[in-house]
Image (cartoon, rainbow, N blue to C red; front, top):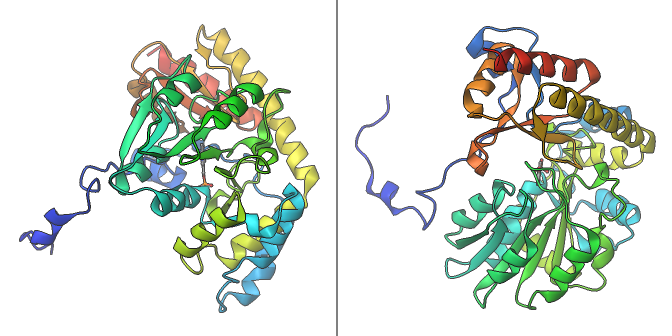
Length: 371
Ligand SMILES: *Cc1c(COP(=O)(O)O)cnc(C)c1O
């Protein structure tokens, strides 16, 4: 029984926390099947890799399971060394996280107090406002330009109270990206008391020639933290492992704030093995490129359009309130992501799936729109 007497401490939450709205994840397949009584549902809602992880990563998980009684290596020595080689940085420049979301949270807890401000863009990744509000800080949200980040508008919000600027490149849920020159000029223009957090969760998918590699800038900017993840192209979202790369002194501060064993042993083993499977990465990229073309063509054939995306997902403008369309897709066993919470009530975000999943989404979408 829930005690109906409300303890006074409940009203004594830290500043910002009482008004927090929880992150809304994509609906799990099991939840949809339970709630709607449908079967064979597909999920194109969380930008997961439809190929799954590398077989080498799965093998590593099985091998790691022999040592589950032991605490993981809290220093993450092997994975940091592998990432150092992979990225061309020192292991001391790498902090591991329970997903890159944890890095976004860690950096905010490390640098931002209730007196400070955090700048990010309208339609940007939902975790930025959550971590900002959770520490009681003030969010300064720059209006978007063509749904992407407007760097001039963002720079215009930076003042002496700004501690962090979040930049998603590419951005989720819009799929938009910032070109090398513009982003480099933006980072160069940031005052030294501002840390730029460059979120590259979809880095490995992008093949636009003017798309920058944030890690190449770390030698020049010590107020830059680049985050990446094994959840997206590496297909390991369920294990929760991501990382941040920056100046060793910056990283050592984040290392002090994190939990001692924040990344589990199976996740670290899988991530290290996944880094070595170049062929799986190549196949994942190729499947994404062809699926993207298939979906864009199908969406246009329905008389709709999607924002041009360099990621593994598309924001589709359905031309009306997207909530009933989302519901109609659910009833057909197709899970996508409503993005009204991102200020995009007429859009649905769909992850690029396998060819047959893309067909099923397009057919379900057509049926939903004709209802
Ligand atoms: C998915 C995503 C992340 C992080 O996901 P993790 O699973 O926590 O690594 C970070 N940023 C963006 C923009 C994302 O879309």
